Amino acid sequence: MAQQSEWLYGIHALSAILERDPSRILELFIAKGRDDERLHKVVNLARKNKISVQFAQRKVLDDKTQGEQHQGIVARALPAKPLTETDLDNLLGNTKQPFLLLLDGVTDPHNLGAVLRTADAAGVDAVIVPKDKSATLNGTVRKVACGAADVIPLIQVTNLARTITELQEQGVWVIGTAGEAEQTIYASALPKSVALVMGAEGKGMRRLTRERCDELIKLPMHGSVSSLNVSVATGICLYEIVRQRSI
Image 1 (cartoon, one colour):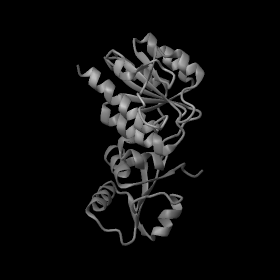
Image 2 (cartoon, helix red, strand yellow):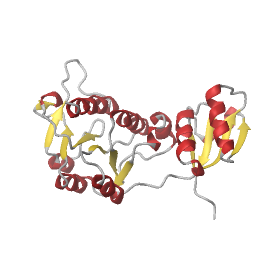
Image 3 (cartoon, one colour):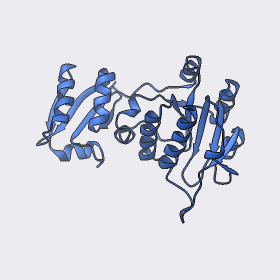
């Protein structure tokens, strides 16, 4: 039976995997003619771990990544072990004041990658997504996340609304973002243990998710646009939480 694998790409993404979990990389492909110091470091790290390195025409790499921007480096890799509710329980048991991010229906891999990168920079302990109707950790997510996808835990849960209730039972204050909220995040006094819920672009949070939140907040919108890209809005909200947690 063939070993299940996936195609990953991008210098930052593959560097992160080679540094933290090199056994996942089965073989590495480099575009012929690509020659720079950053690429040399990745190749040397792969060879140090006895990983096959092959040089191929750029068209071959384009085909393997279905036209995505791969920066001249592509790897066939074993999928990462998915994290579940059990991992979330373990994290909560070992974290005094959890700082969490929940994504309700974010299906665009570019947005998920950008969110993971920002969440890692803001010091979020874990990102939680539903198993269904959510982007997964594919090559695009890892490349956009610039290595953050292999640092910050991405936990898949069966029922997001139930997970919110369980977080609340653990003393975590859950705030959801919604355009109809009466107050902005800047007017909300947030506790140290907090989970931010971001909804899908256009649709926002699902009704049951919204109803389970302790509080709904919004971002002030003074211009002509009615909403922001979910990754941009997430970054603004996360850093306001960072500011309040530091007081």
